[in-house]
Length: 446
Image 1 (cartoon, rainbow, N blue to C red):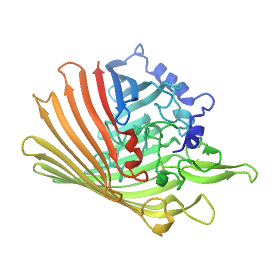
Image 2 (image 1 turned 135 degrees about the vertical axis):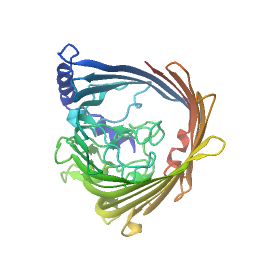
Image 3 (image 1 turned 180 degrees about the vertical axis):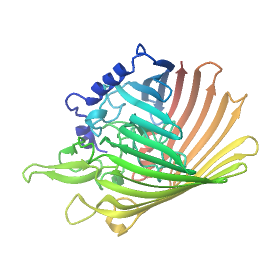
Image 4 (image 1 turned 60 degrees about the horizontal axis):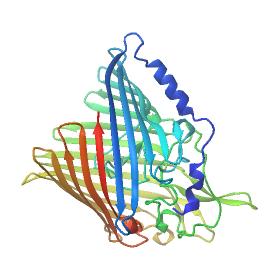
């Protein structure tokens, strides 16, 4: 988005609650406490650097440190803690935090350094029942990295879709109960945490550029001060959902429903008459959906469908920044195939349609996106070559992502690749065509 859009998103509130919660959790889980056993501890170090293809300038330089700790409290309970420390080469590399709730604010938040809790949970197992309390993420869906029914979590979008894992989830404080009743899987979750998706900072490589993402405004923005809605109401702005699944032979099926704030911002006119502002809000919406997964020899077919009856969208009108709710339908089909010549193929096709008058919308009323990834391993799985194509069939935008990864017998993994975008300035991928890059990543797991 334009530079002014996310300025308010980097303002810090007072004392973050997450620090106090983390300190309390660590005190309770001290290894010196009776009956507590250290089950596992680890540390992952990663350095990721990228050079912009257009001018060969350094466009990405980020170091990530991920310490993990797992404690066995007794036969039923265990505790898990995962932190994320990040260090960027410039002031725009770490993304916004204004859309975080107070309890999920980073423990340390500087322009080029950040420390936050990725996961802090107590996990209890009681027969077929698994109870998870604390800061966690909830992955619902069967497609690979494409969000159709998988919309419970807030997601990290500072690198758009060009990350190792998609979606890159943001954990939130809450609870989750999973159990099995007569062959039926029940999965209920609640996030009492108003955090919504993280965006790229102004001036970052993947700051949203296309008018479809900013209520039709061009690069100059709306010409008014911009603020982010307050994220302090954990119940009102929390998320709750239920997923029910069952397996029938080689077919696995599920249905689900959830309600929570939309992770994409809505632009509204706020403030007083003499001092108007543009406010980025995240109204609630509901989602009802289902998934199917069928294993057939070397192929696994996947199908997802979701219906959102109250999707908030900005629309054109006599006055600026008008919005209304529309019906939104998403359908996705995927295939995993262990093909001949030791190739693995993953292909997906997703259609996303918003109902109502198409002329009122700033984005296409129907987006159709296809992805295909082909990969092959060599030298006893130590070397893997892959190429992925992301294509918008609506506006003919493309992203090509070749990658070569080497995993040593020790703890070191090295990878080189590229993210090459093409298309129009208004398109899904073409808006980032100047951000095409070649990158390298080194990961050390201890």
